Length: 230
Image (cartoon, rainbow, N blue to C red; front, side, top):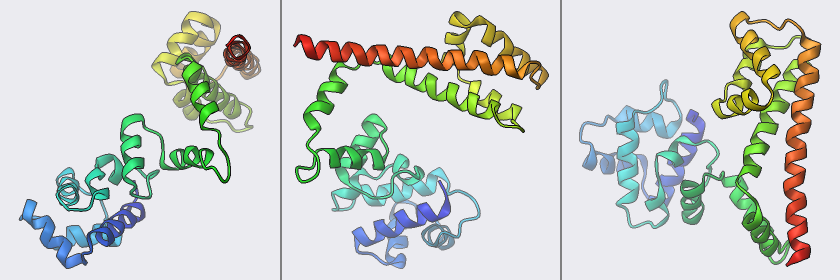
């Protein structure tokens, strides 16, 4: 969260409530009599030097959720703190809270279902219905592996970034069970904060990347095969 994003959302909330800043402050004081004028005004104007407290956010949420505005009843900590959500749409916020998709992704899915542009809702439903959960697990592993490889290929790579990319407990467990040599090299890098054989590590990470690509392609192939059978 940054100040400008929170300011944008609070100004939107004021617009939906039909209140000015003074009226909004009074509404906040109904739930939190001790809340100060600078606390609210700085948040609205994007002039906070520190992030708002949970108490302040809770007060704002109570004002929204007790209003007669149906959109604002879905305002939450996620909405106020998440930079990806820029507009209050009741359905969008509800979907975000349930499945964690960003506002942009939800809008794109809506676009794919728009009769004037695309009409892919049936095939998207079919694909997701037949897609196993481990597809996204392998896709995440591929993304992590690609991030590691990209950093390794830099002339002035960052050991700190490489360790950070590796630092995923489930990912490391998979590598430890299936690519022990890479796991051992990672432990050495983490302990010594240096890479002994960069070229060898790049070659091994390339193999790992291709491994995840293969697993993902196999899953897709199985879905295509199901299409032929049904």
